[in-house]
Length: 375
Image 1 (cartoon, rainbow, N blue to C red):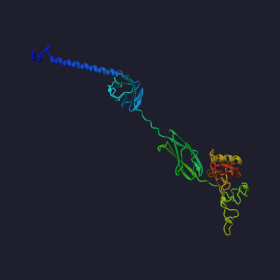
Image 2: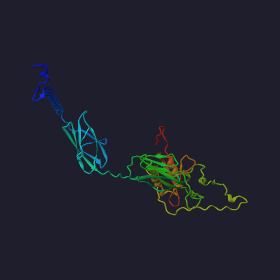
Image 3: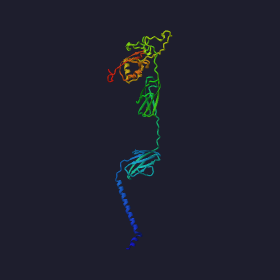
């Protein structure tokens, strides 16, 4: 056989080189199929996880989830790196591959979203599609409830509130002062006459603020030339054991004993006495000194309000209290503020013709060396 015959030899009408190329291609295909089978076997040998983590719009979901009509949703599955993931959204749309998939539902229904990992691990997530909810905006409603909208100068009022909000913190202010209270209820003392404003802010939110105005009226002191009734008719005389040596019971009116009336000066016409404000003829509730001392001690302890003493008093705020050892008497409300949490040792008082307590004299217990009240 010559060289020419070798290169020109044919088999079944085809050159032998064609047959050789076809044989090489067959071996290559067989090798590729074998490789794919080995790879598939190794993947299928890995068991499927019992659960996988799926998120919709960054929120982790379990067996059920919610999506909204005609809104784009981002699906993400958290699994091993390099895993092959396919998404079937159950609404007839095309299958999407990848760890992340974007999808929009156009019907309201419950769709079984099927996630296939590595071709053999399948997980199903039920997604409920509904219309976007309409957000309901609740307007904050705050109501301040005072004991009263009117008070006398030096008096106290208690405030509470009611609202449709979840109350987490309170901040009460008496505007014009630096006083701030953070309790659920607040008690303010009104020292200035006129209209004053109380403000409440809930949950430290300036948008949740409410104000109320309180009318503060001045104290109307009764005009009485003889407030203690010494030597006159109607009120009893002042017991001498309630007065300090040299004490002037008329000092409240600025008229010292023995001083002549201006109308008695030579050459001056008589001066008419000022009109006396007549007390209310209604009888006050009679009370004995021991019971009154117990009630007044409860006020100093913060267990009762000053208003609890009013049914027994003379002209309410005009009742004066003198502490033993002090030269001057003060109003009852001022005395209570100055002596909060102190102990009363003894108490005496004078009644008027209505059985009302007109003037009070008290002795307070002294503090011990360590700030403790002595016996």
